[in-house]
Image 1 (cartoon, one colour):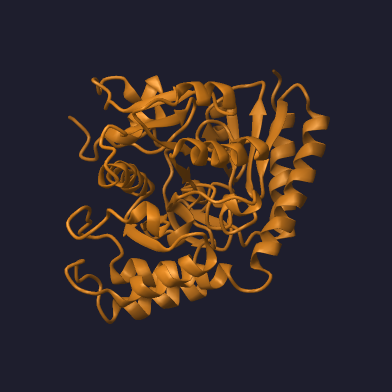
Image 2 (cartoon, rainbow, N blue to C red):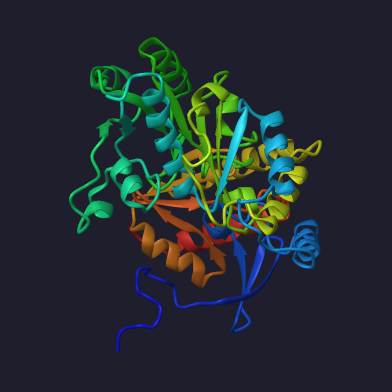
Length: 390
């Protein structure tokens, strides 16, 4: 019999019934230290009292009204995002893929309204991941995601990540934008060189292109600043956010300058569920917590501690760990043994992690993680790696 839940995921045979802070408890009573965070989504950990309180309070009022009416929560959250970033305006949706779709449409509409309808192509990076829709798998360009879904949506030119000369060679009269992740997450926690990312800004300006940052995974404090671009001294024209924005509640956002978004007028884009009152209650609370004094400094400190401890571990087991990668609390271990096997072993020993491309194990703890949880995780990592013989 075909499964009643469509079998599109290779799921681990485990289910969770409750969580608290950095820990999850499975239905069979086992406790796990969560360095998975729902793939960088549970930014405030599990059961954060302010987030729980905000959702309960909003649920007792109104859940959904649609975007045919004003949604006061959207106005508040957008104002806070605008105040904290480069952006002038925000579109709310439900996921990172939808935020990227909005960004791609915005880039085309921007050039169309400027009398340049021939400009529709977007340059993206080899190894990128931008979502699972037809447009976003085409943007990512990875064969494993495209297989079976031909023909790929036209309009994307893929160049090596970090190679500015090749990117410049790919710019033509039909180029509209450059789309890049500051850190390739699914691709293997590959951080873009800051100088390369800064030069993308200069290149976009030189050729009259829009620069789009995919900060779905790097954003909302994950790299130690609210968004990764803020560590570079430059800003994109358009930026996609999601994952940690809702702390576990589905919400995405596409942020843009007024110039980039000028063509996004009534009827040009929409979403039935996007930015509904429940989602905005979650997002506003997450933003309020993250923007409090000391929160992002804590992320930076915990990221530095975790990186130091991982570097020490890597030096102790060079036959298992080839390289430590990443920024802030978005870290990865490139292994000399199969990453999927290691993720399973770590789970058996009580630590949840995430596989990624290039044979990497991702470590994505809640941003509220403390020193005790980091030491507990390192103890599990050390014990588990000690069990493995390459």
